[in-house]
Length: 165
Image (tube, rainbow, N blue to C red; front, side, top):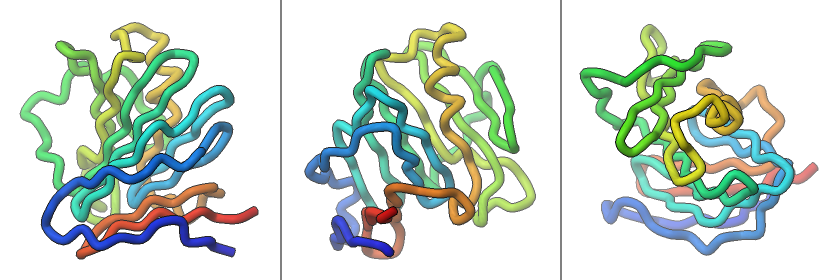
């Protein structure tokens, strides 16, 4: 069963901050083209929704970071240094400031990897320990995953749905 948490019309105003609901890990958060595993001790600090993308701020024992998803990220000429690939998802480290580009195939890019997500924030230091964060992000249709929350955007609306157990 799905319980509607927040629905809003955003028009062309772009990203809009939403009141933070108390969402604490462990929880699987699903977006339009990806998913993320929130772990024990982490919480969603804020949510920004728009018609062309969304992002969540996460606070936890490793610090604060943000996961941003969009269908319209322009793929840079150079993605940075590839630091991993798992289940069709590629991870690339970009320096100054340290952040990670996350790529994969989606419904809007079924034949080639597209830049779908950016993972950034103070919790990322450019070391192997960053993998404890970015490896929990997976690009692909989240329909087959067991999600606790689903964040959708597009058209003239953005939606957060809580999926009941």
